[in-house]
Length: 130
Image (cartoon, rainbow, N blue to C red):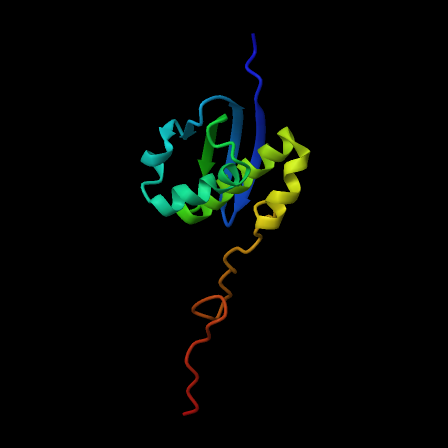
């Protein structure tokens, strides 16, 4: 018997989150590690669980996630987007509530590239008149 699961993808900055959502008890496993083990910060755990808490289904689904690239902020927000997208695949009616909180919108902001002849993306070298 195949386990019925919903998968979704979330991206933020250079982080990519792949999520596999199944019926369960609310266990969240990231890269084969527990959520509290992978993200020790309570605030970041809260960010990840926001879409689940909004809909009141935190104890209804098990989440298995694969995170690559980026730092912990980008990864946590990519994971939040992926979870929200997976929940919308399960129940289309939840989309309105999730969108109102901003969990469906992909945050496309990323680091601007460094340009040649400049120390950073926009910063110029100090100008000397003489």
